Image (cartoon, rainbow, N blue to C red):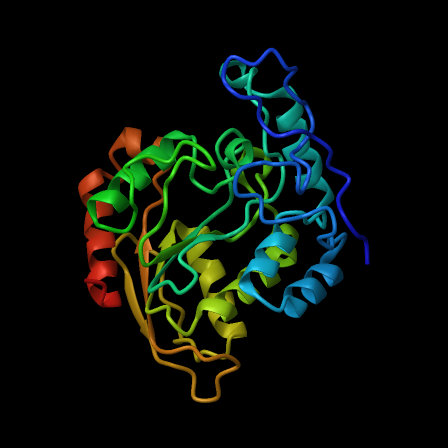
Length: 294
């Protein structure tokens, strides 16, 4: 198994620094705020290694570290690193994370929030899902209003933001071109999602799926965990609710869960009014109540 990572970069320079801005992804252990990995964290180079490393992680912390250095999907690795090198005009003075985005939040969440994938200049830049882009601006404002986030904004790793009774994950951990991962990339990444759910399932009571891609990924996650899924499979929709009973022969210590559908807070959806702050608040207030959070 490969060790370490081929990524090599220094962490972001402090404001006002004259140090050159790196065009390489953040190297594990180089000082990026909240980096879960070290130079010795094992790196998955293909789908088989993803499965092995995900299943073999002995703790949530080790699993998160392994996710954050994965190189199993060549197209996604190439894209995320190209974005980190070229950058966006408004972010030319910033270092980019340029690596997979691991799950983050409460280690014993009552609410699990599942998204599609990191944005090229959002999570791929900041190192945290839904952070540093307009989708995150809308999402975290709602989470804060609903008591699930400490701050109404999420600007970058190390900004003091924390989730309250909740955890956030992406179905695909790397930023994909045109925000569209392939089926193979989704399936290659699935063991990371399944393993993370396995380590927190004992406390999870609600799963909020941001968009149809996350909705489909959640079904696969639940099936692998031993849950019996309804047939026919319920369709995704904003406000859709599906009660999934606890598995009779569980592969993990999971209980019954409520699956909630929520339109993705993408810039297109929020600008066109397909999803509004009130609509997001309604879903997260429902999630909070169903999860039994005070």
